[in-house]
Image (tube, rainbow, N blue to C red):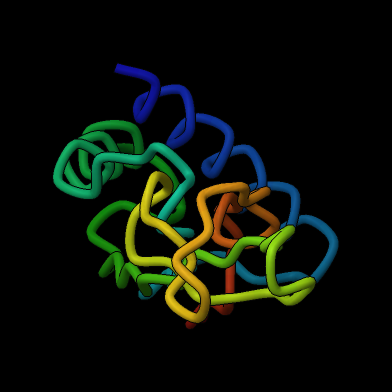
Amino acid sequence: MHEMALCESLRSALEEAARTQNFSKVTRVRLAVGRFAGVEVEALRFGFDVVMKGSLAEGADLVVLDEPGTAWCFGCNDTVPLAHRLDPCPKCGGERLLPNGGTEMTIKDLEVM
């Protein structure tokens, strides 16, 4: 379950932000998770609760924002939205697509004290 490792990296990022921006408690974390990021959201939520115990984010709310997937279509020469990585192009039906968005997981913002 790589979601635990993601949560450990998130904890490190929160601790670093607390040091540089001088806060001591995180009450809410909003994460943007791309549709093609390969993250199981329920496993991420579970891992977040476990990994944040004893940290400045213990008890914080985790809000996960679903970011859409996009891909470059070689048939249309355009970036198109995709619901699933293996879907055909919604504009031309082409199947030669290169995913170019929705693969990231980023911290959007934090509520802190």
